[in-house]
Image (cartoon, rainbow, N blue to C red; front, side, top):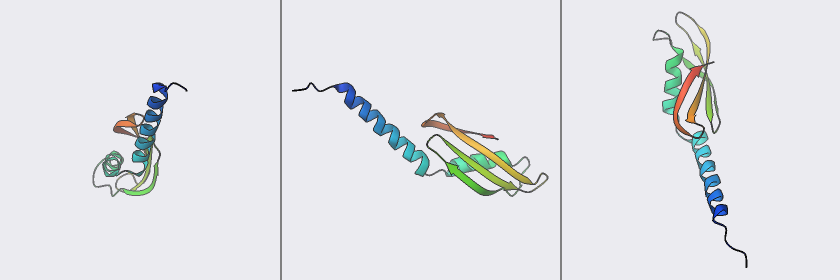
Length: 94
């Protein structure tokens, strides 16, 4: 009989956990991230930012907003987690 290798079970558990975290990042509630990204688009509120495009992946989220106000146009914002699959989202204009 073959010996049971605990490394195989640890690796399987780690891969399942990463898969679950990736699914949560893509399909979970992202209202806070959208609000954080929208706050970056306005230099002086109210700018009337309207979300026109949203793209989500397991490690980042991308947004495009149409803004009015003093400088009308389109603003792109990219948000990444601190540690790939976990951590707080940090957003920056592209």
